[in-house]
Image 1 (spheres, rainbow, N blue to C red):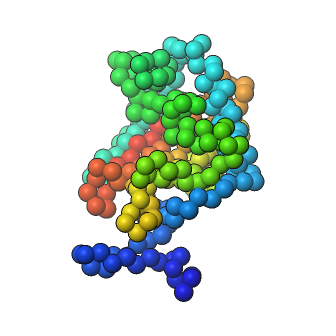
Image 2 (cartoon, rainbow, N blue to C red):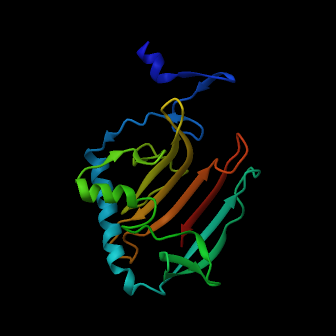
Image 3 (cartoon, helix red, strand yellow):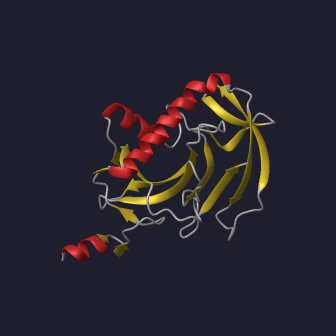
Length: 225
């Protein structure tokens, strides 16, 4: 019975019987009981957060620095991503913090630089800095954010030397008490101290069902050139 419980959850709603799939895909459900991360995974996340912290400290002198991203997207109705388009961006310190801005002054889709104060990794790095340990998921209201560095497909995030990928899944707590995954994001960070990119993300990919009809998703992906 315990095995059946973990592989399949059945929840009775007013509209009838609904099957809850437990997994990591969009629409799947995840247990929200926090797990303390350790071993190599924790060390990799410490390295990322340390690199982000060093980069954040250096940002005042990096304003106006240029970064070119190859970017593509897909709408809820698209079957594939659009052809990549190159965007030249510069780091600017705007009213909402340091951002990647395009030449017309508007924000690049992945405009957040991933600093100690903002970005997908900031919640995890803050917990790691304050508690010297890290648990997944992290809860903010009814939303849960899960993080992992293991089992990531090279199709979603392929790494080279001095790079590391994280996979972050976000879900909203359901009536069942589980988190229904609505967004997944893959971020590749550079840990190379020699190329001027340490602590910067070199690729991001995001898919989400938010704002789409049932069974559809939209996506965005970008690679630093």
